[in-house]
Every structure is written in structure tokens, then in C-alpha cells.
Image 1 (tube, rainbow, N blue to C red):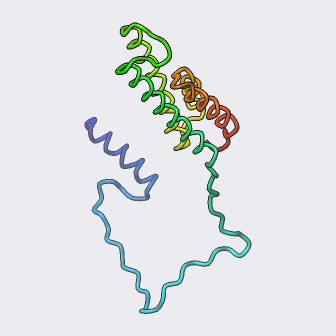
Image 2: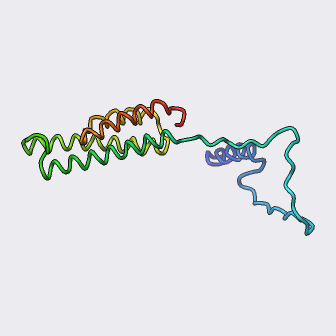
Image 3: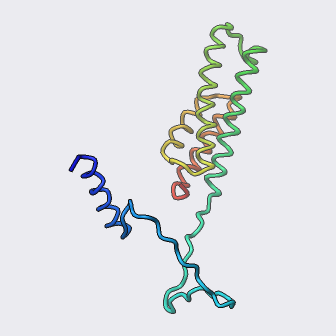
Amino acid sequence: MGVEEKVDRAIDKRYRKRFGENLHEEPRMLEPIESGGGHVTPEPVEAGKPVMLEPVKPRTRAAVAGILLIVAGMLSIITWAYSVFLGFPLISVESNTLIVFAVGGSVFALFAVIAGVMASVGKNWKTCIVFSLLGILSIGFLVSSILCIVAFIILLVSKKEF
């Protein structure tokens, strides 16, 4: 008996144990159920057991935090793009320095947007917390940092929604 035959027998044995038939047997056709032309009624549920459906989690706070983070990130990206093309409105800065700050601010803004999407969907609470903290550093008109702080607080409160 070759190695291949031993492997086939072992697979057949495991398959038979699990499904009650051999893997290499011819498939059997199932007989159709005859209903007698009448109405088919479902099997009754046991009398003492109520049918329980899985409850739907309320996701309002996480969704609000997600929206705040997305708005904050987009506002920050718009702010940095404006400052690169038209100059920083409050102080005069060299263009090379401004580009470096704009790239850094935009990266932090992307973290805020990613955290907003994850919070809206309800995925990975810890990552949302870390990314929302990184979003505070995006500094878009300072409003985006404040929105990220508010979203961070809402995320801390809404841990059970994830």
C-alpha cells in the first residue's frame, strides 16, 4: 500500500467520522418530500422556551464621535491645503517649513478620518481612541483639535457600543 492510499484512507476515515459517509462514494440523490398538496406548517417551538433574537446595540454615541472625527479631519486637511497654496493666515512662515508642517498636519488629519470611519462602523475601540488622540495634533483652525477632543471624550464614554 502506497503513501497516497494511506492518506486517502485516513481522509476517508475522518470524513466518515464527521459526515457519516465516505468521501469517494457515489453521491446519493435525496428523495423529494411529498407534502400531500396541503399547506406546510413549520415545526412548533417548544412550549416553555421563548424565541430570542439577538438585541441590536445602540450606536448613537459612537456614530456621533465618528462624524465629529471625520469633520475634524476634513477641516484640518482643507486648512493645511489652504495654507500651502495661499499662505498661513496668522503668521508669516517660510514655504519649505510650511510644507513640512502641512504634510505632518495632514497625516494627523488622516488619522482622525480613519478613527471616524472606524468609530462609525464600530470596529476596534482602542485604535479609535489612539487615532483620535493623534487627530488632536492636526490643528485645523483649532476647531478640528477641539472636535477631536470632544470625540475622544464621547469615545471613552461609548466603549460598550463597540
